[in-house]
Each structure stands twice: as C-alpha cells, then as structure tokens.
Length: 314
Image (cartoon, rainbow, N blue to C red):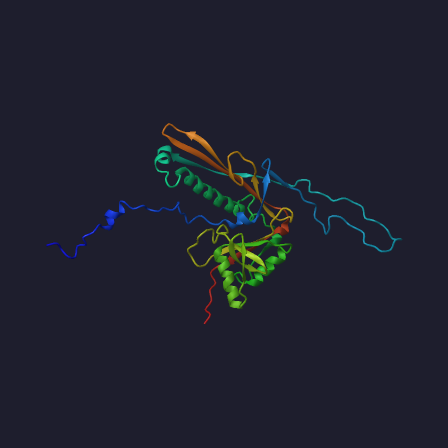
C-alpha cells in the first residue's frame, strides 16, 4: 500500500528541467547614476587641448566715463590686457581591454549577447572612473583646483543651512548645483530638520533631489568620506562643492575629444583589436576627458564636513 504522505504527482525538481527561466542582464551595485558627468556642461575638443584665456583681473575690464557735463569730457583710454601664459588643459585617457572567448560568444549569446554585455559593463566602469577623475584628479580635478579664496569651513562640523548660505556667497553668479556625498546630504537634512526648515524637492533629468535656496543638492559617491566611496563608519569627514556650469557662464565644464574613431558615447571609443590563436577576441575601450574651471568664482568648497552628527528629538 502506497504511503499516503507521498504526493503522487510530478515534483518541482523534475518540472524545473522543462521550465523556461527568465534572466536579467548582469546587475552591479557599484554602478551609479553619475549625476556629476550628466549635469555639468561638456565641451568637445578637436585636438585634445583647451586653452583658458583670461583677462588680467581688475574691478572692470576697462575704465569708462560717466559724466553729464559736456565741457568735462575726458574719455579714459587703454586696452584690455590678457594673460600671457594662460592655462592649457590636455585630455587624459582612461583605458581598459576586454577579452571575450569567441566560443562563448558563439554558443552562449541567447538571450543576451555576451560581447555586448561585457563591453557595456566595461563602459560603465570607465564612466565611473571618468566621473571620479573630474572631481579628484591631481591635475585637473575640481577639488584640487578650487581657489584658496573659495574654500570655507563649517561653523560647527556638520553642514548647516548657514554653511550652505555662506557657500552661495562664493558662487553667487548663477550657481547651478551643490555636489555632495549621500551621507553629507543626509547630515544636512538632519540639520534642517533640527531647525524646522525642511528643504524642497525638485526634479531634474528624471531624478528627484532636495534643494536649498533653489539650488539642487546632487548626490555622488566620488566626493569621498574619509577617502572612501562607501564608508562603514557612521562618522567621517567629506567636502561639499557648489558649482556654476557652462562655458557661456564662465563656469565649470567637462572636456572630451569629439569624433574619435569607434565612438560609442561622448568621448568614449571601442576598438576591435583582433582574435588571437586561442580564439579570444580583444576590444580596447578608451575615454578621453578633463575638466576646466573658467573663473575662480565658478566653484567653491565646504571642507571637512562632519557626516556623523545625530540628534535626539524627544
């Protein structure tokens, strides 16, 4: 007599062999929206060099006459002096090589093309590095090139509304965005909550951001906390940037090489390098990038911001 506890039907393990399995593309948590690279204006270059010509600074570029007495006409004379050794920015290259076994590509490319997925993930890696270099590069990085007069410290450690207001006084000519680590934005929100002045929310390029004085706070993990993208400790220090972007506004701009052979996206090229004797196909990926600050007052930084201040609201 059959055991009544045994189900007389096809088992799940057996049925699984005939079932179709829906699959995702590769998912990587390290990929970010890269808002910095999306929101600052970029300038395409023809020959990989960008010269920032500046006028020798004074109260105005040239003296002018303002007088209603027609008998006292002495129009100032002169010329607008340019810097004789303006700074030139040369594009840096960020590169990687992707290898794909052609047998894997031939046999295992349904439903997703293995070569296309490998290249797509490599492209994301290069773009992550590009955004990090825009902020942190030792030569052209924004943090490295903020003028000393544009650097301030928080009043008490945590980023307060007063501190961001002070930052605005440094970039008061059409400021575009605050850039900050998510932990720094959370710390600022706590300070706003403590004072009863919650920031408003704005929608830009499909993303929702909080704003202070109408200026969006854009999150990026490339503004490190204690040198880390993803710090484990609750405490730590970081920086908050405020920028004006755009060449026409004499702001902060990104630079890229336009019309490169094999271009897949802005300044990023994918080139096929051939197939070796073992049947491995090779692809070279390169992105050419830099950044420029066209005027000192286009950017300011709030330095040494503490992200670990919490409060008891009882």
